[in-house]
Image 1 (cartoon, rainbow, N blue to C red):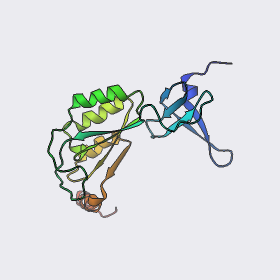
Image 2: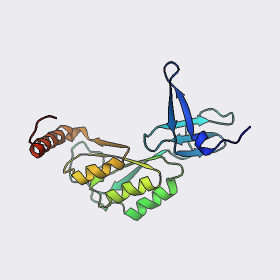
Image 3: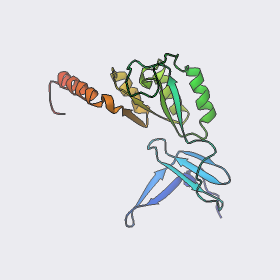
Length: 188
């Protein structure tokens, strides 16, 4: 039997309706003697399966997604927030890099959070870039308050960005007004 190349091992056919197939390219793979975990860093698609006669695993030895609290304080003072109102320093870029360096071989995604909007971290862009350089997909949730065009642009490095519902309607109205004022059109 021919030895499979990594590329052929990482290409999987997923059957859909009829005789059509969707080909998913996985660019990240972790395997041990019991399971393999495949991940597409562009789409966020993850596949996990048992190998060598082992069943699909119920849990992994290391999480494929980590929650990392990079923020130490928040400016919003939301009544419903579970993080509290303490004021601490944000996580340093060096400490964040240490976490990614230790986790990057097993972790596919990192959810950035903590006490406040991750997009307001002083090293936000560098954090997102470091994740991508290490084949880890960053995601985050924000209030969207004072979201800048630069933050929106760099957020394209993320797999997912969510805006908290408590602020969503307010943010959408501001964006619509900005769009209308910038283009003098109302074709949203």
